[in-house]
Length: 181
Length: 126
Image: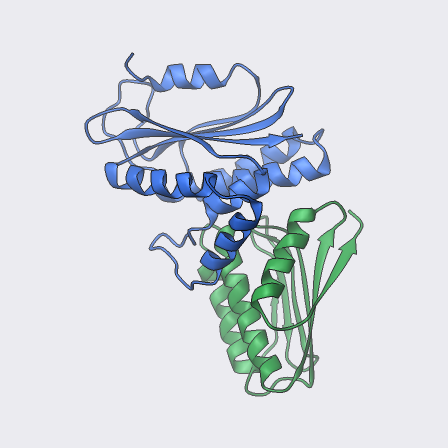
């Protein structure tokens, strides 16, 4: 079956949706979204609230820094740095779901990075975090390379990721972070 | 040198650096997209302060949230404080975390294990 962003979104919107963003991520959008998210998670435990907020900040900022512009516009995909981010809730807990377009190089990097993160236990994740924290490197986008490691630590769950073929040049990268209540 | 006083915003913390009093305070949220832009003047200030610090520097870090981009910059702040400590001056670091916020306590412990200055972990009510 051909991958469709609309179908992907529909599939992930089956649980209660507490926040949905679809479009081009900007700095001011992040500020507005975070205000809205805080209101929408008022009923969560204070522990879960902090984790959700932290993971969403990292997610939205990853989307802001790394989303690619896809030229095709046939699938509800808007022009510009298109990205989707949603927060859903079910009996298990909260789910932060992010989607954006990446190229082959980003896919290769992310696969390796995420597989490595998922292979580590809590202690090893902590060590990796401290190692990256202390390596004095910043990427050209200002990110520290810590975001995914931090999300894995804060959520306490494995990062659930997939790449879907979209066009010859682009993949749709889907990332789900689960926070158990 | 002049003290630094910056009011907090939804994405950046309140900052008070006072060389005469030997006070270094960062409070609130630190989640800017570009954290280097925000922290560079603070790190530069500490670099200058290092040449003539107060005999005791009291550091209060009370963050509600910080993003990973800030976490490296906060480490740069601690590295400057470590240099002050290593040059024979007293540096007291108070790391505040809200009750139940195990992640913020752990973040303080991560810094403490990298920076060779004793941290005081202080739990506060929400």
